[in-house]
Length: 298
Image (tube, rainbow, N blue to C red):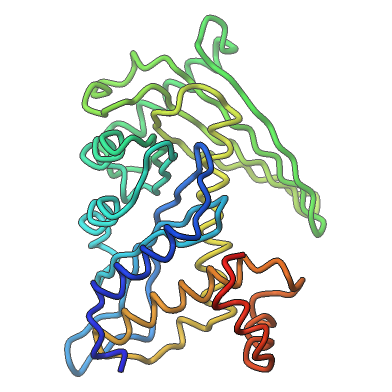
């Protein structure tokens, strides 16, 4: 049956349902990232594994939409298609380095949103220029710079992790800053981890249109990490998505959307203090609980 459903039509029904249950939250972080369904390939038919690029509303804990591709490398073309499907006004869109493209930034601004984009080596010298800007500001102890810093600490299972979020509004050192629509800040995250007396430090760099409020920047960055923990991890552990052997092109895409629907309902169910996997079990055993999940919005 699911191989007969048109994925585009099923996706439109999904988005209509999401918009009916989604709450309006000012400056909600919308994290965009991709995930492969590893065992959905069919080598005999020349079909690669399904790769879904999804938009995760962090505060609402719902998938807003998804676009399917057959390779991770196709994310660059899938992200603009996904953004076209979403209502982004007032939202902060976060994307990893794959989506750090001038056209994507322009598309987000045109839709009324803001962006925070991760940097790596895919933008020529941009990542190096941002890193050098922070080195220069740090050498001068940030005196005279439009800068802020926000710090958080977490201790868990013998591990202490301290994160410092730095923002700079000085963009003179960026040779191509004018190409980025709405760009008004650069950001750096310094993550220091202490485990068993050993300390390691990691730095990540970003560009954005959200201004230099460091706490706001921290919320956007932490929100993006949530798509891995709240969406991708749950799909793998609670739904065993990577073990799915559905190989029909339409059925595997429709089932991916169906898992997103189920996860959205389970994540937003507050009646039971259970994990996602146990909620699934209870839904299979208890018809009333299943009915509540299907027909009650919260």
